[in-house]
Length: 85
Image (cartoon, rainbow, N blue to C red):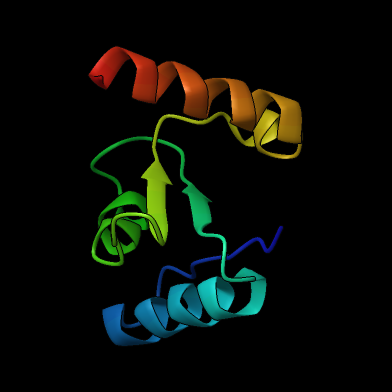
């Protein structure tokens, strides 16, 4: 897990670099799941630009307190893809 914090005065390019660095840091060749709070917010929008099937997936609408519970994230991931299948 690698949290990324965005600062209000940060440029979009700097924020994108943070997301890219975090993805690189946690990638182990099995794919990366990016968790963001609300769909349409800056973290979500920036993260969605890194979508790559089988490599980077983005799950939005995650409450920050739950993001630190891997079991919660796994269950949300399974629900999301079962619903879309």
